[in-house]
Image 1: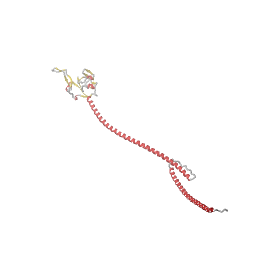
Image 2: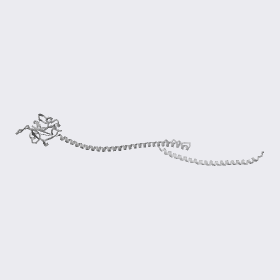
Image 3: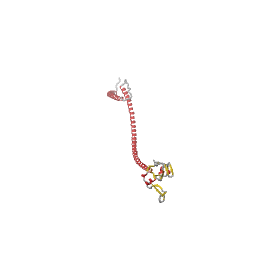
Image 4: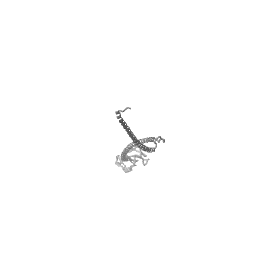
Length: 291
């Protein structure tokens, strides 16, 4: 048997002491690890319970939202499977179905919003058109008022001018009537001389009588002794006796009239006037003496 050297004898207890310390350290480390694991497991269980509560709350919220969204008509129907592998899968499927309906609802809301925006745009356009039309109507109303005022003024002017025209017409008619007025008388020579309608002028003075004297109208004539006529209407002078002969003593010419028989300056029958203006031009007084 070998005998241990002194150095080896001294080193052996040191080695044993080192080994014992290491094993103790390892045991302490294992104990600490186990304790840590227990703490972590407890935390994990707590987090799992919390997560389950969150999941349940989320599921309830999703169910409520899905129930509300499902009331909207026209959205995709739920296709959830009745028998699934786990509640998590049911929740995921429910979320997918709800998201589809929510997406459809969002799309519909977007379309409605677009339609609303278009409607507002059309409304603004209509408002602008209405404003333009109102402005045009106001302008037309103002123009109509101006035209009405002008029409009233013109009507007054026309009324004034019409009154003047009427006055002028009356004056013209009176003037025409005055110019168209003529007067005639037919009678025996002695009677006409006595009335002062005609007189005898000229001739030779032979002490006893004046020979060759001519009958002429008096210088002043009384209208009341004559018959008034309108030369525009009367174109024939009727004699009292168509069998007797008559002679014009006044300035009218027998050449401007027609008679049944004519013998020089005398005629028989009614006197027909061919041209009134020409016949009555020399004088408005016609004196016819019965022969």
